[in-house]
Image (cartoon, rainbow, N blue to C red; front, top):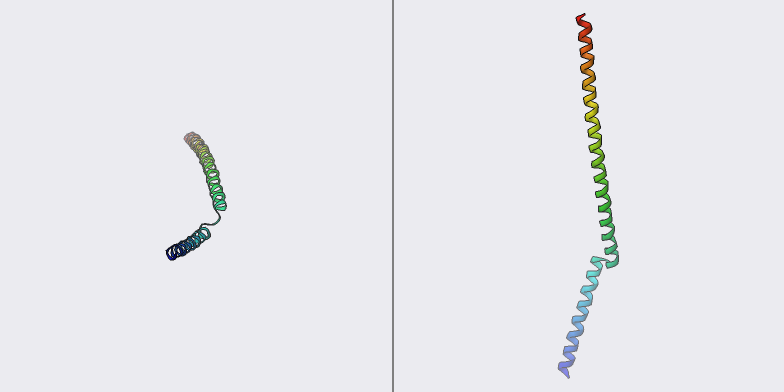
Length: 91
């Protein structure tokens, strides 16, 4: 009977240590439901930010193409003005 009581005491002690360790773990990790919701929110934010980045990059490409067109048009206009000035100066 003493062996059974000693084993029961060791089991009780082990269970108490386990409960303490679990409580400590849950305190550090937080509520699993809260952690799961935070993770889901972070994943959703990442997806939204990735979409916004893709849209921004596409807009940047469009703006760069427009800037290139404007630069070419401006260069052509400058050349036309120079040519006109040279014609006027030659006459």
